[in-house]
Length: 638
Image (cartoon, rainbow, N blue to C red; front, side):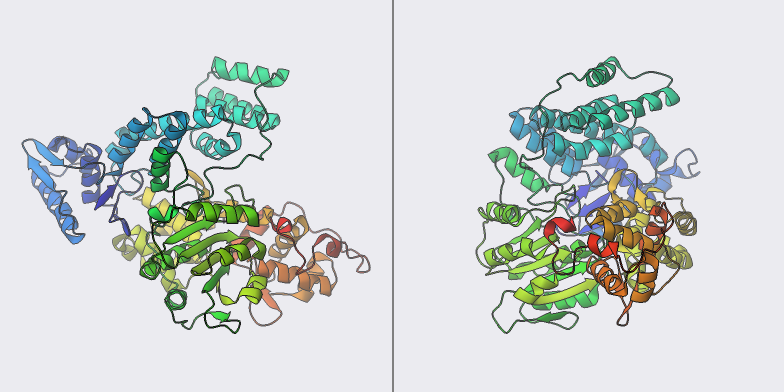
């Protein structure tokens, strides 16, 4: 068993992860793990667990808390790590195999003795150990005041060095992802702002670089009454003068880190892949590391049954599909649906369930880069061949193709994996792929109320959800039973142990969907996810979605869409079909469509201008601006 301290405190056996509920034993365990192998005094532990308001029988209460922690260890079969009572306190032993904090520090130490390329991979591996808000489920003011900032500083030093190395090697676009995020979380950190300005300048974005300087200057003056440091001021002057700050990155260089073994939805390579690359200085086979797990996965029982049946030799009920007339065709399943609806989570969950049937391994291949641009068919095939070159196993391989945008991306990969099986996730329906290659199609919608309740219980904890059952139902309803929204709300509750579920639901619904986002990870955001989905559409289609979502109609028909958009019904039908295929509409009875409540709220918020006058139907400008159904190239779907 392994303790995960770099995020919500959790326990994992390498396959499943248990996030401990906010409780006194959880706080006690965190205090011991922060100082592994050292004696932690009883006075310090009492301060961690109870703060300044300690019980009158503090000594007995602490012993009782230790006993509860030992029962938790017994429940999860933790035998090697014991809480040991010693003179003056308690101690827990740990090493790099059983505690991620020690593993992180080992990788950082190892990186310091490596060459720059190996150093970069090793430091990336260290950063990948951080799994979210630090000790988010630990209810201890003392730890959050004294220990969390110190641990966070260790991560920031590593990230600063990573960005320095990438800038020195001209990987400006790659480092922008990290720098945008960290400068928003730490708006007064001048070194990160300086790195961001350099990266922006070297990608030809001087205006944005100057805007970043103005941002930090205003922040420092308002918060601290000081000006930016001299290095930042000199950099601003150099940009204004047009000084040469290095060659401009045109974006044509290959991206070395975003193709293989990534965590779902993040574009971040797995820890094991980075470690192997650090030793061999070349990409290693992804299957040597297990696929990412999905903590707290619940629901989708019908889909899970159908997919496991398909992938283990017998198709089950629950999917629409065709075998195209051949019994020996390799299994293919398409998971489609709205952004954030849980397609990747379902694919990974099922891939773990059927792992025994695929001795050749299981491989996750993202078909879209972190910036939203899709891989070409050639790039995807090259990434698959490179990742598969060192596969240790023999036999059928299960391929998870994540976030496909066009059938042409997928077809060459199916041919390359003809002896195995494939799960494809996509916001698009990919009907043309199913027409040529067969397979089953699972269109995912919102969770059922019971599934939403189970998800909240799995993440937040049975005790807290059970204390406010009605508020839990309300919270799930406010989130529209949308998996991404539910996980964001659950994370907010974990980071605020004293926040009532009812208050959380009330706060969220007063500004939907803007408040469904996490400040420490911009990727965990419903509005940004929906913005990115619209950016992939042709502008006219995105505008049509926003205008339709802003109408008061709960049910949309082609006639109503035609009236709202000012276009002929024939063109309106094409628009509705395209939005349905993009996962932004759902279909009820034939000809009747509806939009998820969160998508409607996002459309209302994003619509800045009132609908314009209705054009003359004889001049359907909208039709000219929207590519016809069936003739859309991959580029038009970005």
